[in-house]
Image 1 (tube, rainbow, N blue to C red):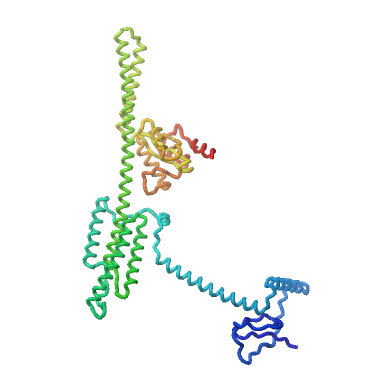
Image 2 (image 1 turned 30 degrees about the vertical axis):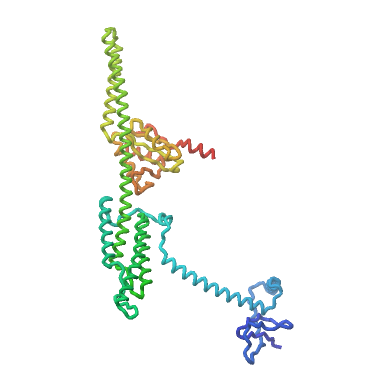
Length: 459
C-alpha cells in the first residue's frame, strides 16, 4: 500500500514529511487560494536508505534514538505548535532575514560612499599620522615667506575681482532673456565663490603644518561640491584660481614651520648664552678668589721679609703657595679662553623618561654638577642622576662624536638640540672608552634615582 504526503499549493508553507492536518484544521486566510484541480495529496516516494557507517545494527539503532530525542526536544521547545504554523513561521523568518541582509548591504554601501566624501579633520588622528615636515616651497627665512604670501594673496584678490575665480555658462537664459541669464549666472558664481573662499580662508586660519594635506583635501571637496550644485549652469572653480589657493595653503604651512624652527633656534641661542654667561661669572668668581688668596700670600711674605726674622722654610713655603695660586689662575684663564674645553656629562632620569634613556651634554662650568642640578629643576618631577663627568680640552668634539655614534637612537629626530638617547649607561660607558681613548676614573652604570624609588615605595 503506497503512502501519500501533503502537497502544499504555491505560496503555502511546505509541509514537513509525514504531516497530517489535525482535526478542524483550516488554511491561514493570508495564504493565496490553491489553483483549481490542485492535488493536495500525492504519492510519497520513500527516502533513500541511510548510509551505514559502521557500528552494525546496534549502532544504527543508537543513531535513531538520538535523532528521536532531538526531535522530541524540538517539539517541546515549540510548545506543541502544528507543523504548518511552524513552517509558516520559518518561511517568514527567512524572508525577514533576507530583508535585513539587503538593508545591511545597502547601509554599508552608503556608509562607504559617505566616507569617501568626508575629509578627516580630527587633530588627534592627524597628529598620529604626522611625519617629519617637508617644505613644499623652501625659502631662506620667515621674512621671505611673508613676502611670498603677500604676492599670492594679491594674486587671489586680482583673479576674484576680474571674474577668474568661479565661472559658469555664457548661454543661460531666464524667461527667454540672455541678459537675465547672464546676471543669474554671475550672482550664483559670486555665491559659490563666497562659499569656496570661506572654506579656503578657514583652512588658512586654522593651519598647522601637520594639517596641510587635510586642508588641501577639504578644498578639493569644496570644488567638487560647487561643480555638483552648479551643474545645470556649468558652474566651476577656475583651475588656476584653485591652484593659487592651494599654493597659499602650502606657503602658509611652510611659513608656520619655518617660524617654529626659528623660534627654536632663538631658544637654543638664549640657552647657550645663559650657559656661557653662567660659566663667565663662575670664571670671574674663581679668579677673584685666587687673586685674593695670592694677595694674602704676597702680604704675608712681604711682612716676613721686612721683619728680618723670616726662616728659610717659611719663605720657601709662601713662595710655593704663590706659585700654586699662579698656576691655578693660569688654568682658569686658559679654560676661559678655550671655548671648546669643558665637561661632557652623561645623566639619566628614570622617573621622568623611563629606563635606558640618557642625556649627553656639555658644560664649560668649573662646577659641572651645578649644570646638572639646573636641568633637574621644576620642569621634571625628579632630579637627574649623574653617571659620568668627563673633562676634555675638546669637550665640544667629544660630545659631537657621542651624538653621532648614537644618532639612530635619538628620541627627538627633528630637533637635534634635544640630547636624549635610548641607550643604557653601560653602552655609553663602552662608547666613551672607545672614543676618548682613556680610562674613566669613575662611572656609574646604575642610577640611584632615590626620589623616584622612594615615591614608588610610598605609593
